[in-house]
Every structure is written in structure tokens, then in C-alpha cells.
Length: 449
Image (tube, rainbow, N blue to C red; front, side, top):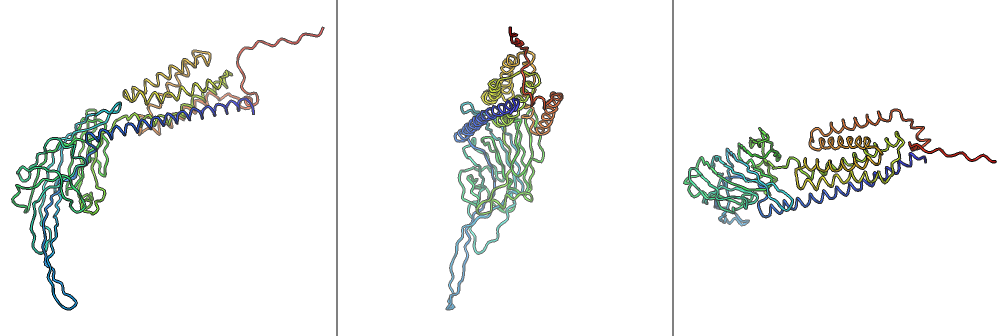
């Protein structure tokens, strides 16, 4: 095996060692992400978790008494009385919610968790229709049933008006078919349940990161405003209109029961997964996900840098020791560890700038001695600066990551082809790598006397 192939095998082995180091750094990032998830769970346990608001739904319990006549085999008739406890459920004809989402943050050690307070105003109308009944019916006390995921998030006392009469919200409600509400509004002041019923509800609700609402009405409208600049709209329905700007967002959902299966899902037994309209307060540049993505580009750092060194060594005939390759690779790997550690303290962009600047300065200083030229060291430093800048562009531009990455790889390949366009690979393979240094000529042997 000639010297060039031997050197290439050694460099490949060193690259594998650096990739192992990158894998270990990736494990550190995963661990930090788990610690952050634990912090979120801790905040949820002491504050309030993600909230899902369902309702209100009008429930009218009643007892139905029917007489059943049965004839035995001997022709004897026997009459029995059967009582059934049932409930009539009515969904809003119109359901309108408007609210402001006030974000803030809670800390758990180094970790920040986004929480919110919803200042919501709900109003709607019911068309009250009696169900088909048999026998005699005794109606119980009607109530509006609601559900929130975590009742600890209810701030103050909600204000409820039903048909112009103020009512009180209480905890707990019996199951209605398959759905289990945990809040109820007894309708003490409603004298008649015939025809029409309207309600108004002021509700302040705190939660962590995500707010969802079920479109239980025949016609549903949800309008939210917030100063949060990077919302994530999810659930089964996206907003019909949304405006996301530097000063916050405004979104409007309009969902019909014709497009939603929420009413049938609530009446099913057991309850099926419910269609929701959701928004989450996400971080625009999540440090852990971006750091994890950055490590996936680590192999690109190693291949480009080691390849550049090898080509430089080949063209300039300047030998570089494998230990120097190894130290260079470790310098590249330590960047990702610095990145995730800095990003826990400062914004991701600032952390990326600090980590990349530290590594570029260190490697440029070291390469000036390895390559025996300050100019050459600065040249490789400029290459590393361009590479770090390109990777940052890929990280913050998910929509254009593929096209930007493809163009970057094309440019790198073009640069390699241009730099090696005059290399005689057959000659290099047969002669191996030579040292381009002025050597003192060997003195000829003395002539025999």
C-alpha cells in the first residue's frame, strides 16, 4: 500500500474517532432536553398544565317513569313500573369565544418554561328542544356543563350570566353519556327551559404552553390575541385567518359542526378523541432542537476540514501529523458542546456566535503553526467562518434548508475540483506524499585513494 493510501486510511480512522465524540455530545444534548422536560413537568405540577376547554353544554336531567305490561306463558298479565334516570343534552347553536393570551415564563433552575393566562369571554345561544319521552317525566335541575383539563388554572371567580340572570359556577358534574365534565353552572334563575337560552361567561384560565378549545357548537368562532411572536397552531383545525408579526399574533377560527365531529365524539361511550382548535407558545429558536440539528452537520465539518487538510498536504507537499488532525477534529467537536452550554444561558444566536468565534480563533491560531504560515492559517480560519455561517443559515431557515444545503455542497465540490484540477493522481499514488522542504544534499562518498 503506498503512502497516500496509508495516510488516507489513518485520516478516515481519525474521522471515525471524531464522529464518536460527536455522538457523545449528541447524547449530552438529549440528556439536557430530558432535564428541560422534567422542568416543564415540575412547573405543571405546581402551576397548571396545558389546558383544554370543552363546553358549555346544556344538560337537563330527568326521571322517566313507564309502565310495562308483560304476559306470562300461562296468559297472566303483570304490570311493572320502570324508572330511568336520563339526561337531555343540547349543544350551543352559536358559540363565540374571544380572548387575550398573556404569556409569561417560569424558571426551574436554568430552564425557562412558557406559561400563559387566558382572559376569555364566551357567549352563545341554545335552542332548547325536549327529547322524545315515554310515560311520565319529572325534570331535575338543569345546568351548563364544562370541562377544563386542570381546574387549578381557574383564576378568581368566573362571572356567568344566563338569560340575563347571574349564576354560579361549581366544581363537579355527573357524566353525560360518555363525556365527564368537571364544572357545572346550575340554572337556578331560569324559570322556563322552553325555546331559547343565551349565556355569557368571563373566564380567566392559566396554563402551560398549550391552549385548546373544542368546537362543541353548531357554529363556532374563536378569536385569540397575544403579544407572543412565534405561535404554533395545531389541532384538527387551523385558523381561518391569522396575522403573526413582531408585536404578537391574532388568529380567528371559524368551524361548523358540519366539518367537526365533536358533538358525536362527546356523546359516544366511551368518548372518542375530540377535535380541537389549539395554539402553543413555542420558542422561535429552541436551543436543544437546534443544537441537536447542528450536531448532525458535524460530519460535514469533519469531512470538509479533513479533506481540505489532505488536499493542502497533497498539493503543497507539506506533511501534517495524524495527531494534528486529531486535535483539529476535537476542536471542531468541542464547538457543539460549547453551543448547547452557552444556549442555556443566552439566546441561541448569541450562543452560536460565541461558540463559533471561540473555536475559529483557537483553530486559526493553531493552524498558523501547523501550516507554518500565518496567511495559510488565516485562510483556513476564513473557510471555517464561512462554514459556521452557512450552517447557521441552515439551522434558522427550515423551509429553505434543503436548497441551501444542496447549493453549499455543490459549491464545496466545485472548489475541490478547481483546487485539484492539475493534480496527477497516478503520479501521486506511485510516488506518495513528499515533503516540500529544502533538504541539505547528501555528500557524495569519498573517492578511494
